[in-house]
Image (cartoon, rainbow, N blue to C red; front, side, top):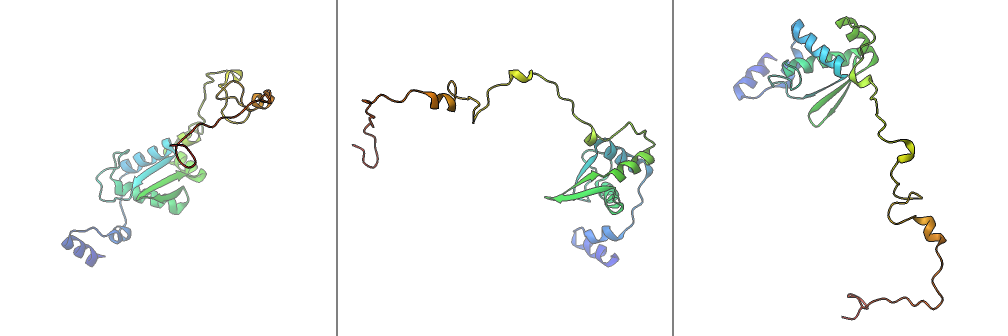
Length: 171
C-alpha cells in the first residue's frame, strides 16, 4: 500500500485500497458525536467520498463516519444499503442496545425511526370528501348507480352524429 500511496500522490489521485488497509484512530469526541446522531435519528446517510472534509449533518470528517459505520456493519449493529454513491445505514435492535449502553441512555429514549407519529384528526369519519371511482360519486350527482337507474331513452330518439373531420366525415 505504501507503493500505491506514493503512486497515487504522484499521479494526483486517491486510492480507495489504501484507506481500507489502514487502521483509523478515532477521537472519543468524534465517536460520540457520530453515535449520538445515529441513535437520535436511527439512520445515517453518507456519500461515498472519503476525502470530504466534514459530513453534511455531523461536524465530523466524512471518512470517520464511513469507517465507524463499516465497523457497525461488521458487528451487526446497522444494516447497510448502497445506491447512487450513497450509503444508507439503519440501526438494528442490537445496535440500539449497544448505543444505549455506550451512551448511558435510559430505556425510555428511542431513536426517531421507532417513534410513532401522532395524527391529528382534522375531520370526523363521516365528514370525508366523496371518493372518486366505484360507488363514491366524484363527478356528477350520483355516479354509476344513478346512471343505471335512469330512464331509458324514448323510442323515437334518433342519435345524431355531427359531421366531424377525419375518416368518413364531411370536410
